[in-house]
Length: 250
Image (cartoon, rainbow, N blue to C red; front, side, top):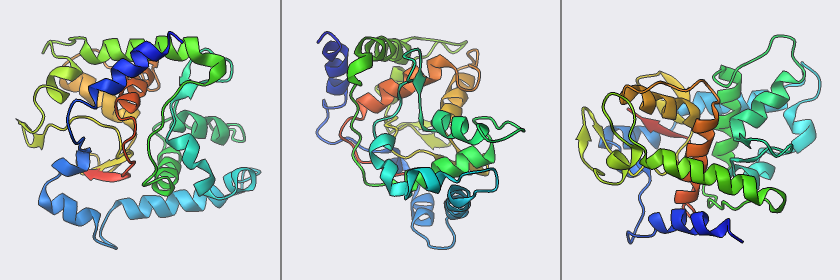
């Protein structure tokens, strides 16, 4: 049961405060209001697109024909990323969406393709209010443990020309202003996020790459193992929190 040690350490990090707060708590009043405004929230159109894609059978079987209702994936969404079937890497929701979409297409999509993002938005909307429950699969405990340790190390590792770690912002400077943004604890409960600066939703993969860019470090490729390791750590760190995305960001 050695895998429990870093797992419990990561969980304990998020239990030091009496109440953990999602990124939505740090939104400006205007953005918070927009998030509840029916017909004005820009995420709504992406939810609609994702729902249409879920039923689309133009390239063969639809997602719905195999999985049924999107709500059937709630348990999977709240426990991803997990180790791939071949036991070699971590896979998140967008990885799985991309694999199934590309299985029936001649022209291949990427993790940042609108179709992948829209399906992720709709699926995670259906998982809203579920509780994050991260634990390793029995057959892959060792690999999961190794990936979690790698993600933990990355969170505390200084990087880039600014020589900053994730922890320095998201543990030590919560609530302070960074340019026009307020620093949150980086609990990944609200993804995908529609950023006004992007004018579209983005996955955690994209947001983490933006953080690398922000500290002037070498930005990993889309889908890089480091991004999945960090995502695993962040999800474990948010163990027991409620999913409240998709959400808005500046």
